[in-house]
Length: 103
Image (cartoon, rainbow, N blue to C red; front, side, top):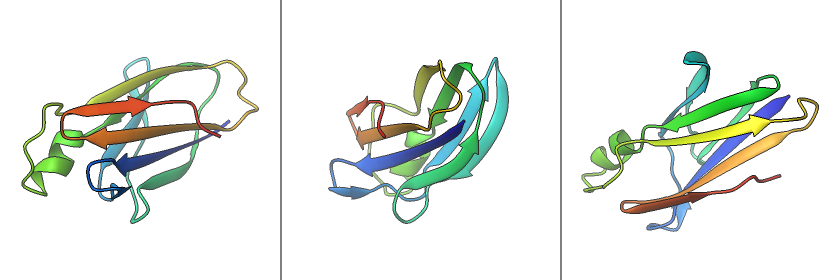
């Protein structure tokens, strides 16, 4: 199964480059990376079952001298079909966030 993510800074209207992201399963780190200039990480793999993406949003905002409410965002999701691609975007602002299953 392939997994990708995309972080968009909704307050600025552009990709959030430089966000550290971890992929976890059962408390174990499966992968870790930093979003590129387009706010993306791609090419991770994981199997069926429950997973977590952890976005270090506090570090991202602190590097820009922006006060923010959420120091990190954790998104739990379940992979039912490991043969499918899963895309988990994060729309981010200093005081709110949202996510969805993308394509």
